[in-house]
Length: 574
View 1: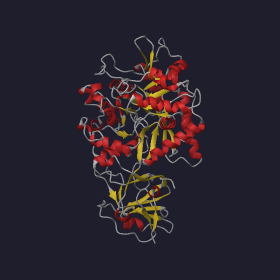
View 2: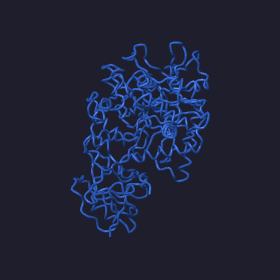
View 3: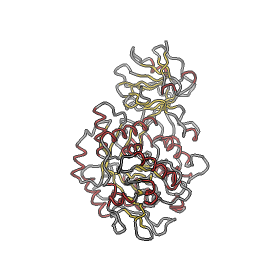
View 4: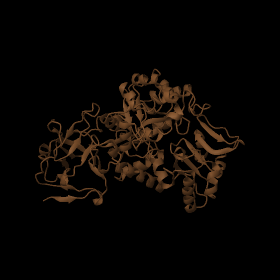
């Protein structure tokens, strides 16, 4: 007897459990590989009659496809044809038919997002969320609504506003906020996290005046009278942010749980994350309670003292596959949207500005050498070509190992002469293709055509033999990987009406590889996750369309039916 197993509370089509002989496989061509097995016990779960991409062959754009997969003990036990794999079932094995009632579902390795900020995402969700607002007026209305229900004197935080979406593209000011914030100090970050607009009360709390000096790598915007406009750039944001009370433990946990649920619902099974240390301790608490359903590699702040970094690294088992600390994250510059990315020549649309480097080269070299000798992997945020060059110069020092898999995060604008240096130095380009969907509306204006041709240059990196790892920079962009896949293979806007230097687009397999095995390589995990082959982690997703063959526009609306981490179904939650 078959019994219906309803997914997502009946919103998506049912998948069938069965203990009987399965129906014939659907008419999809599977690789003739025979069953690959790692069988010691009966499988806990078998999917059959499916189109299952193991991940083998992605890089070469020759994907291996099988019909069935057996899972047990958190691992993939076997893959092969429906007939071969269902024979392995024991009396307690659950069998799930992927071709129920003629409606096929597809299995892929879970996505590994190589660049997230879960803590920031969670707090944005709980505070003033300005994601996608289309005008200053809409922003003001949302801030006013939140302020009206907040306790007296409560800081208004959050943000995610993006003035490039507004008709006039003019930055907001403290006076704009003063009109709607009442007695609340306000600190609202731009979507990239490299600019904040602060009201008068917030500036006063931070002691920021027209005579204040910004720290290295930051700027305080002044009006014609020499007074702060309310815009603080990069490190200058710290002058006020350090005055904001931290969230309570309950608020922090609630925010992280919301961000993690968002990730799992979009097929993300691993993240490489940069949040606060208190967020890591909260992840640790969840793990001890058996409630950590997402794999987290947590980065540590590059600028912390070496003694602090060693203590933080030693705090948790480095070999814990669910939660551990990873690389050291440092910042070379800001962002293109804020015009704080460090460029070798001035911005094409702002001839007086070349961005804001956060380090001198000598200081960066000294700190990088010290931390590299201590055995840390280094990862540097660098968006402008000058910032990227500074990072590469630090990595090129004798004594910085080429085998450390050091990384440059973003690498959005690169001097073409620097691309071969990535390969020579063993540096990974950790990039977020979904940024192009936002930035292509103004990037060429910022850069001019010559630099724009080597911006978001994914194929140029691959052609030079540079490893790619893909992510989203969540919450700067939505955590869905499907926007990233679409951007990587089309380099077009979501409406399909505008293209951006299409010579740097990737194949479907190259993009999927970068988002799974490439990201795993970036965290030294390529031998245990990123593929669905025997012995690897059973981190997989069931989706409603074939990501390899669907039309690019259709990829954007992919629905995740189920997400598994370590063989456990973590989305939807039953």
